[in-house]
View 1: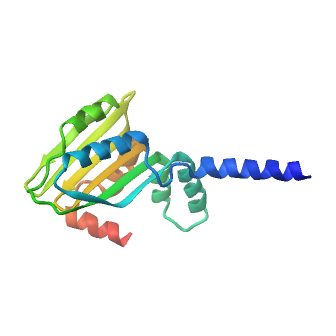
View 2: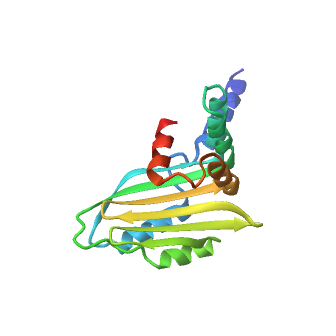
View 3: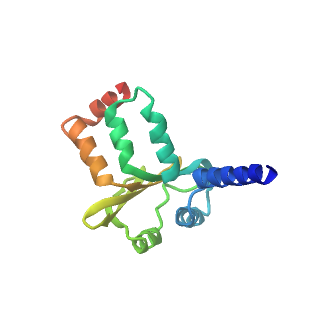
Length: 188
């Protein structure tokens, strides 16, 4: 009887560990990219506001939970396309210089992981880089780096992103202006 209880506890502990592994910590590549950016900003202090990873297991659990809610079918469909998500938001403090630049070696790091740059915006107040990873002519991952004087945001999303974007464009289109699109999203 005791061994049966121990076996159940071990199975339960193993299941919980595999289900929730990576929920708070981001993966090694994400940390290396973050640390490389941090080290290039030697004259600033960066404080973590939010940093998390949601893996396939937790997303699946979320899909199951959402199945019992009154959420719109479109949202449910979009969640089906995301397989993993990593997000980091870091507050910049004590900046003594103008807007820092995103280190160019970050692009090399992401290229080694199969990403290609599709957008680079270098403005006076903000830098935004967007990278994508294509596999068999399908958009499978997106990496966004956004930097302004107040914060650094890193986002990596993997899944069937082409389908996700297709659904968003089909439902919302590009006809709406930015303010209208934001307002309609806030209503939903």
